[in-house]
Image (spheres, rainbow, N blue to C red):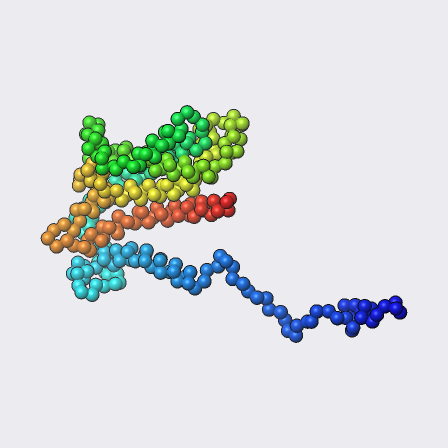
Length: 305
């Protein structure tokens, strides 16, 4: 080692080692914001959007708890008042709100169950089964969405009268049990969410189409069924045109019953808002129950993708 230069004989632990310069203090790692982390601007936009969407519900609560004179004043109140339960009681007396709530729950639940089941069955057939005329039948199904429903009101009402179903809940339930939009929606969902390998594996195990539908398709289609169920329930609950034609004021749904509130020379807006608040609560409950399924389906699809 006598011929080796001094700078090469030194090692990391020796005095003559020339390594990288060491900092005089502890190193503080630089924190970088994740691309998915929201900043103050994103939170501000979300809060503003939330306030915009929540304000109509809040104003309904405020108007339902005030008197009609307070709502008509130059400076209306912006906080809930003490007349909420009194106005709700008046709304229940002026219109058959209780009967309308029960009727709307029956109609909306029956229509939602029928649409979700029939749409999932038809969507599975159009998405994964091979049969003659599949494309033509799908085109006809989608084409019916382009026909305005008002064109079929008179023939439909004639059929309802022939069947002696006028002023009865089946007259509102039966025409809405099948939905072209639901069939197309579930078909598109199952095309993306249901792999062909799962269906083929079920067939190789000797399962019939109904067994495949029950054991394989339904668990995969649950998020799409939740979305379709929520949309169908809300659309049926808010439907006014056909129920006001097929039903009377003695056996109404919620929207038909709300029509008779606040009638008179000076409509009582507080009573109308009280009835509207009562009619809105079931929709909020359904959204709260199905919201987790919807978010879970979206997150599951994102992870798979």
